[in-house]
Length: 593
Ligand SMILES: Nc1ncnc2c1ncn2[C@@H]1O[C@H](COP(=O)(O)OP(=O)(O)OP(=O)(O)O)[C@@H](O)[C@H]1O
Figure 1 (tube, rainbow, N blue to C red):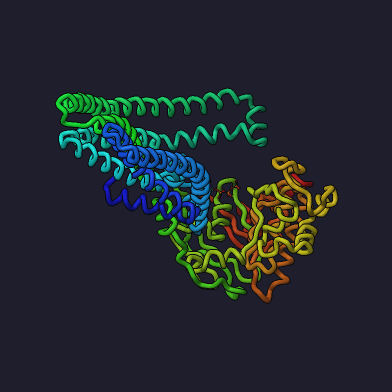
Figure 2: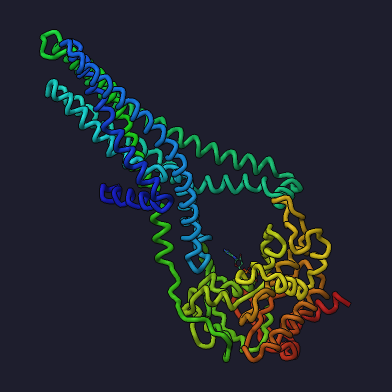
């Protein structure tokens, strides 16, 4: 890393620290700078004391003693205060960093980055180095303070004899050598980020009830645990090797330093023997030499921490830049009603990290005030199409337009405010029950009558009635609440999807897999009826289901196959065509007889 980059990174971390707590940042900065003069002051007091005692100057002895004690007390007190402030501030910086990681991620309108391993690796590298980053601002202040202290010591040494300043030259190689050792370690830490992510996600499997249940039933817990431990050992072994090599490099620097310091002390002995120095000079020299080593060690450690923190800050900058470069470009207001509807023209899409297109030229229209049923075998691309319509993914080719306006031109937040839905991979929010439903429309989170109405429409009031706290019941065992069945959770997810007041696009992606066919039928009837009743707004509904008895209620039906539209038309038209849809419909009809 170049010096200019290093300074920029220190700037980042200082800004981070100021954002976390401005007053404490400035206070600690001032304290740290004071400690730089305290060491020099103590050594000067010792020299002054010994020389004054030799000359029998009682008042100077007293002044030198008071000055020395004052320096000592002040630096000890300040060290104590600073270290307390430090810990507190470091915690705040780490919290601020977590917030910024979340903000940076949330700023990106799509979720593509959350499936990019380079993005996720940066996040883990940043998290693992967060404490280093938190310390970088201080380390920069300590570096300045340390260098000022070293300069003061040198000045005092040269005052006794210019040749003694050579002790400083001996310390010069320590800095780049320690920095090199740290670079070795940081490179290993960064290159093992993916293994650490794998290890963590494997270990996480044992700590969540759902995954642990499956692992235990399949009896493969030991194998997975061994895999995780194996990964951990690999990472630790690589880190240990890097630490050992680094230690060798650092020791070489210190060996050179101690050789020259030894020669310096012998030289002081010679100066004393030839009366070229006073006993006060000698005491000060001994005090300074030991202080100098500590000062150098602290300065080297601070400077290398700055460099190290700079490397972590590089990941921080990468994430912030990523978020800035991927900020939503659409600013147009979302429509309040649809006239033409939603159109897909030759839409292509490939997931990040894959080179197999999932959607391969899909063209279809959802006319205003209509419902569209989407069917197809597993993996046909139905959920992918749903995700593209919400805007969390962008097509690689082709266009999606809303009343002729490209979806990408709309303000993503405004567009999602007029979308609602319920999905097969719904979330089980372990909140209070009314919150778990209310988050479907955050602006009405505390509007209990609306929440209750949404629950009733979703046919989920039996769930609420059975719970002791009703709408206020805590959900989920994670926080000591009640655990629901999968179907009950799904019922609440559906209610959440009904929270939006006047959605323009309702997406129902198999949200009823845990409900019986009749319940699903009733629910879709409700949604399609809602679509019809909102004709004046032109709202549309997209239904994805494997149950043809449900899908046939939609105004239009599209059969997706291999990422393309294979058939489309009304239920009657598709049945008359006698294609794939008609065959599957008849098969299911026979199965239910
Ligand atoms: N996040 C992802 N990253 C990479 N590939 C994905 C991702 N999600 C889905 N796919 C792939 O995209 C293809 C289409 O998946 P999609 O979920 O859209 O199918 P679907 O028609 O909804 O299937 P199902 O009926 O099983 O829900 C699948 O081959 C799947 O492997």
